[in-house]
Image (cartoon, rainbow, N blue to C red; front, top):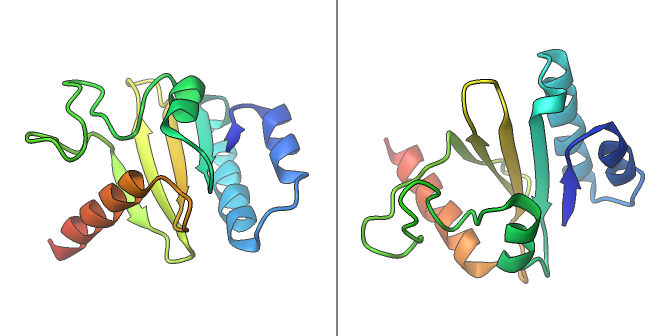
Length: 135
């Protein structure tokens, strides 16, 4: 899992060998956040093969599979999407943006569409991307 929350963590992440699509997405999101003055208010996490829900909770303080307001888990009756944006980037990655509060802080979760990535998380993204695109 890559976690980028400041300049040092961005430099460390970008110094690693990354697949070209992920590198492009990361550099684009970091540049966008800097351009609009939100670099210090953006936490980007790339969820990859082998990352677990426990690891995500340890890093974020919450699970992307559970609505943080009512605590209903994806797959349970009554689950409602809580994020501000979910998109299939068509480069092998989903992007889930979860803004928090009114100050501009946001989590950007980049979820690799690959075997070995949390199947339940991939199902949730696929299902809700299909619903959003059908509108």
